[in-house]
Structure formats: C-alpha cells, structure tokens
Amino acid sequence: MKKPPYKAYRRKEEKQKPPVHLPEKVDTPEAEQLASDIYSVYQFLLSHWKKFAALVGLAIIIGGSFLGYRLYLSNLESKASLIVDKGIYFLNRGEEKKALQLFKEAVKEYPNAPSSKVAGFLLAKLEKDGKLLSKEAKLNDFLVSPPSKTSLAALKIDRKELQSAQKIISTARRDEDWTYPEALYEGLVISLLKGDKAAARNYLDRLKGDFGNLPITAVAERLLK
Image 1 (cartoon, rainbow, N blue to C red):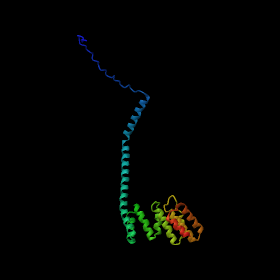
Image 2: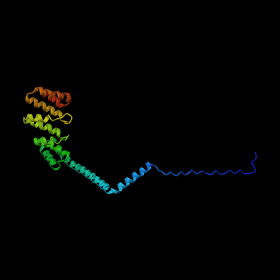
Image 3: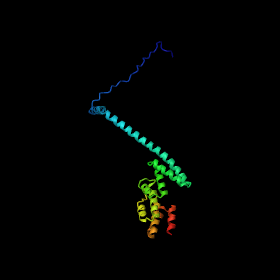
Image 4: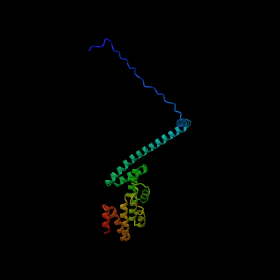
C-alpha cells in the first residue's frame, strides 16, 4: 500500500506544568496562640539571658570541680594502693615490721583513700589496737567495718571482756556484714566460756543452717564436741 502523498504532522503535546498551590493563610485561634507562645518564650529568654548564662556557667564549674575531685581521689588511691600492696607483700613474707611501717605511712599520708582504710584495719589488727578497731568498725564501710567489728570482739574475748564482746557481735547483721559467720562463731566461743552450752548449741545450729559448707562451721562443731 502506498503512502499518502502528504506528510502527516503530529501536534506536539504541550507539557502540562503542575499547578502551584499557595498555602492558605493560617488564621485560627490555635495558630495565633502558638505564635503568641513562641513570642513569649523568646521574649522571656531574651530578657533573662544573663541568668541562664550564669546557671550554665555554674553547672560547668560544678561539673568541672566534681570531675577534678574524682581525679584527685583516683590519684590518691593509686598512691595509697601502691604502699599498701607493698605492705601486704612484706606481711606475707613474715616481715611484719616493714609491713606495719608501710601501713602507717598509707594511713598518715592518704587517710581518705580506700586502700588506706584497709591498711588501718590491718594495722589495728596486727597491733591489737582496740581504739583503732572501734573507729574502723564505725566507718560504715562495707569492706573494713565488718572485719573490724569481729576483730574487736575477738580482742575482747582474749582479754576476757565477754560482756563487751557479746555486745559487739550482737550488732552484726546477716544481710549487711559479710563476716556474720565469724560473729556467730565468736558467739559460740563466748557461750562456752560462760558455760552456757545451750546457747553455744544455738549458735552452732545457726551456723549449720545458713553456712553449713564453711570451714568455720566445722571448726565450731569440733569445738562444741
């Protein structure tokens, strides 16, 4: 079939541009209230910027001081722990005099460091210093207060001050003092020294009931027999 003698022209389709929608003016009570609130906040901040700047500055100063204090304590602890570690090393070697000198140095130079509290307890225990043990027991420190309490009770038992020893161990608490089994053992010893086997048996039963697998319970059982 022959093509027609004329040329076919196609009309170019004009591209339709999407209509531009201008946002309608927001004129509602809510919008007016929002604008008013924003303006009020802006004016408040503008009029009180000096106070806010002072508060921010104070927060920075306090935060910096706290961080500096923590770093200061950390530095004290690192120095104290080095001295106490040396003291424990000499103590394990049987060189008690050298150990005592180092413990005294730690307590004197760095009294607020945690390691120095341990040094104070060891110093009091080795020298059988009742006053220092009593001080350590009242620190309310989880690490050193419980053993200071039972060590002080043991010192009272050695001195035959049984009433004082009994009063000390009566303050021991199962959920607070990790030396509670030792306190029960000392209660048993005090009862035996008083000739009260029934009370001693009660202490042993408590040891066997709650701490049956501990070596101190086996020692208490042999002692009662």
